[in-house]
Image (cartoon, rainbow, N blue to C red):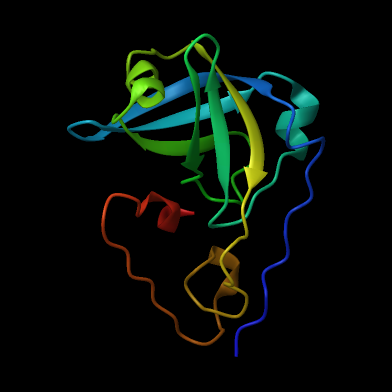
Length: 145
């Protein structure tokens, strides 16, 4: 039996957008990139938390916003990563951005996956019962979290 994963605490209202700066872009496959973002506000950067399976709204002023799963390690607090496939207006516009440009982020949203007690889902879970994960389709990046 798996226990429910606790929701992380948010430093502010998750409905409020916060400016981030793109600090790196990794081309994963054709049309798919991982964007590493850093909150510009130090207090937000220090207090922002999420759990595996949650997502953020990435907002590009004048273009729109898109719900994108967080694909970085929840224990890595200095930046957050989103792996994005360019398939629409917002994600195509995001694909045209470069390191140093700004993206607004709000969140996190969604219910995290119940990973408590499953070995291998988090680095600190060693010594617990074995577990595995399976992903398919076009949205496996959240499994990286």
